[in-house]
Length: 41
Image 1 (cartoon, rainbow, N blue to C red):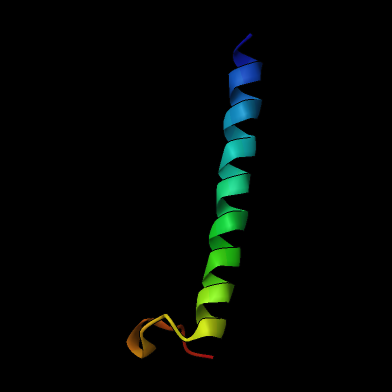
Image 2 (image 1 turned 90 degrees about the horizontal axis):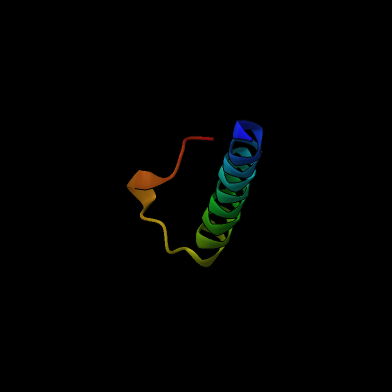
Protein backbone atom coordinates (compact mmCIF):
# COMPACT_ATOMS: atom_id res chain seq x y z
CA UNK A 1 0.00 0.00 0.00
CA UNK A 2 2.83 2.38 -0.83
CA UNK A 3 0.44 4.34 -3.05
CA UNK A 4 -1.62 5.42 -0.02
CA UNK A 5 1.33 7.16 1.61
CA UNK A 6 2.35 8.63 -1.75
CA UNK A 7 -1.12 10.11 -2.37
CA UNK A 8 -1.31 11.34 1.24
CA UNK A 9 2.11 13.01 0.97
CA UNK A 10 1.26 14.60 -2.35
CA UNK A 11 -2.01 15.95 -0.95
CA UNK A 12 -0.27 17.40 2.11
CA UNK A 13 2.40 19.02 -0.05
CA UNK A 14 -0.27 20.63 -2.27
CA UNK A 15 -2.23 21.82 0.77
CA UNK A 16 0.92 23.31 2.30
CA UNK A 17 1.82 25.16 -0.90
CA UNK A 18 -1.70 26.57 -1.26
CA UNK A 19 -1.78 27.72 2.38
CA UNK A 20 1.69 29.25 2.00
CA UNK A 21 0.58 31.22 -1.08
CA UNK A 22 -2.57 32.41 0.71
CA UNK A 23 -0.50 33.52 3.72
CA UNK A 24 1.89 35.42 1.45
CA UNK A 25 -0.96 37.23 -0.29
CA UNK A 26 -2.54 38.22 3.04
CA UNK A 27 0.82 39.36 4.42
CA UNK A 28 1.45 41.56 1.41
CA UNK A 29 -2.03 43.06 1.70
CA UNK A 30 -1.42 43.90 5.37
CA UNK A 31 2.03 45.30 4.66
CA UNK A 32 3.71 42.85 7.04
CA UNK A 33 6.29 41.68 4.53
CA UNK A 34 9.48 43.73 4.51
CA UNK A 35 9.91 45.80 1.31
CA UNK A 36 13.24 44.12 0.49
CA UNK A 37 11.55 40.69 0.65
CA UNK A 38 8.79 41.43 -1.86
CA UNK A 39 9.30 40.06 -5.36
CA UNK A 40 9.78 42.60 -8.13
CA UNK A 41 6.70 43.14 -10.27
